[in-house]
Length: 466
Ligand code: NBP
Image 1: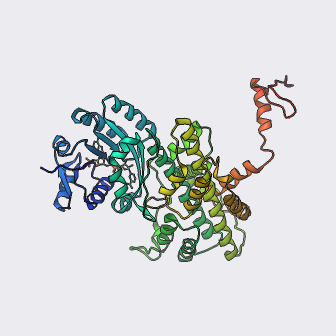
Image 2: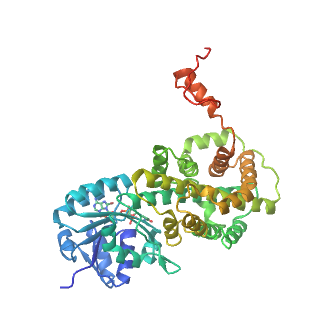
Image 3: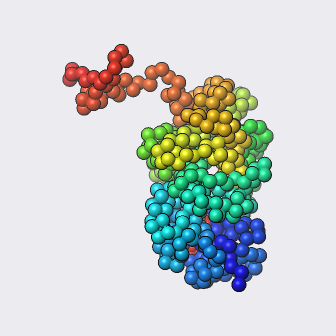
């Protein structure tokens, strides 16, 4: 009997669509889901090249060796449980791939655990949501390179293509794939919030209507700001409500949730002594949007400040430039975090290649990635994107707009934490004096932590006058 070439466990949104994507590339796919009804529904559709199984052992026996099994289940304990369960049935050299949003340190641990059992493991970041999974996601595989080579044909076939190149490349050992996916999601949080702030500012200070703002975002999408997130923002602002007059956006509750990858990025940033302030601000903006009681009380206690009259056309252009620069800072911080992780974990990440596979299939796909790719390809040792000449030129052109927009936001009481974080970060880098001398003095005063002087080498302590 002809064996299946690859198996997928977990046939929810992502698993089902990836299974269909792989099957549509003429690979024979086996599917298994904990709840059989889900598998049965798929079987009823009679998809080509797909067979669903009710029994895990039968599913495993249906696969050609070395077996290749992609897990598309909820990240966390379910992955550990499945690894344990599968280890009982699998043979030396079989491959388990985790395509979910797993925490990269869990992936490192699972890789080591399964290696002891001579089972191969890959941690694979997959971005693109439901549509990407079905039509071509961006894929970030991590693990041993020779193991990746065994499954490369499946992953590269189903990945999104940019100029004919698959948006899938070997990222690095053990947890590297899931780490890069985590930072991808962190950047996604920051970019989404920058668009949120642009929308709020255009609405409250520029006094634009939803359809006028849709036009503005559409025009951005015809420029170097072209991106999937800008495109869908324009579409969202145009969408009419089905129940009432006007646009759906005005009937959606003003609070947002999260699944955790942005939070992980922020925690890792602190552990690595790096700065991804824009991602952190975006995560906290979502958290704060859920402070129902406090927000209600403050809405009653304090009036909205008067907003300054602006020329809407001039303001619109200032917001566009502020968004462009905010986005640069968000990406630069995210890529600097990956660069640091690469050294810290010995992953040898190729940041140019990583930028190249973000160009299609994933949520942060954007024209701007072309610039990042070029920067890192021209200089593999580039310490930080903010040192790239072309990027410095854009910063010079746009910094005043970012400053003006952030100031108008503060004066007008329009919460814009990510814009403000962006200008603050640039000012921290640019300022000759950031006040850290006083921190040294305070620490030496209360804890004898010592300080360094500008005029001589070495460590000093002063007997401060209490
Ligand atoms: P979910 O994350 O909603 O998980 C649902 C699937 O996990 C179902 O198939 C469910 O089986 C299975 N499952 C659970 Br829950 N616990 C299990 C266990 N202990 N043993 C076996 N199976 C278990 O599905 P998803 O949205 O398709 O996402 C899958 C992965 O891909 C996640 O890690 C997610 O973070 C990641 N991801 C999702 C997206 C997206 O847009 N949705 C994008 C990129 C990455 P059941 O039917 O029996 O309950």
